[in-house]
Image 1 (cartoon, rainbow, N blue to C red):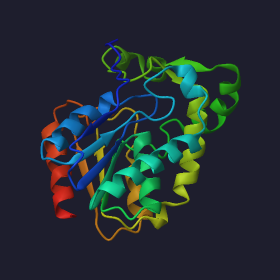
Image 2: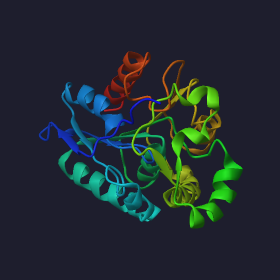
Image 3: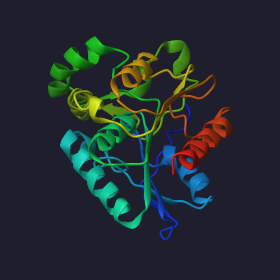
Image 4: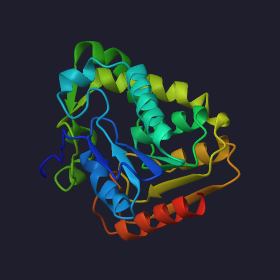
Length: 252
């Protein structure tokens, strides 16, 4: 297994730019998976904010002590600050960060929302929606690689914590149920990015969002090579970043 990619730091670039982008990382991950994109957007130059969500970038015990409303409240506050400093605001979320981005887009008048590797429906729904609701009371964490087929485990990069915090996973489940109820409120221009090589996010997530949001402008970008953490270095990085920048410039 490769070294876990982890970053406890928060990032902010180009504070004086009037175009603001709020980046949100995924479940049990950290700002590591968003830093490359943050630096790319900062070079344009755009005001970029990428902070660790509550319970992330610290310890698994911290993560297991967080309620999903803490993630939403934290993100609302962060976006409110950015909005007060910007003429145009955009949200980009990866995995669970994509679900949070969609929630924010349902309550804020943003100029655009971009989600990648979205997990709004879980790959193993019975395990996550039923078994784990009981299991998390007894077992607080589970090694990440054990949730993937044996032939893939040693070739995968695992971001953030080495284990999945199972109590926090149950909060993630609750949050998705809440977020799905509000998808029809989204009218902002939207870009949905999915990789056919993603071992975590299923293609069905794209269809759920595309059909439920009410945005007049909604695009789908499918790539072939990126892993679940598709905003980090991969064979599709140039294409993904180019399309993100094009989307922002088009929807100013």
